[in-house]
Length: 93
Image (cartoon, rainbow, N blue to C red; front, side, top):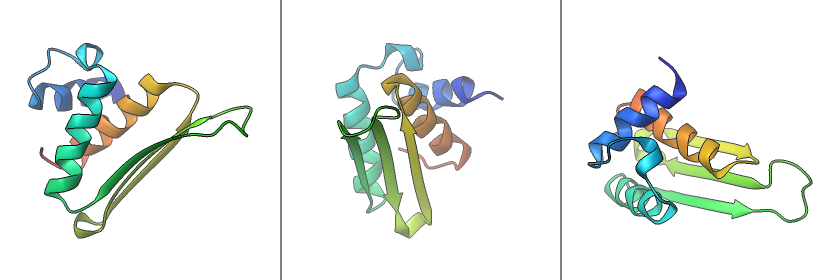
């Protein structure tokens, strides 16, 4: 399955019809729940010193032995990556 399909399945776990129906605030709330439940942390960094891949998405959950990181030029791509990896790893909200 593709990244978008996995991400869509994870979005459905939060009651959204698709990953495209999620706004940035919704995404942050979802990751807050996941991080709190799994005693981890999530961050989104914007790096103005870079010419490319200015966004860094990072999710760390040591209790689950999960470390996710994506450098990208697209917020959507970062959201897709984080949600799809959580679905693949069966990290439930």
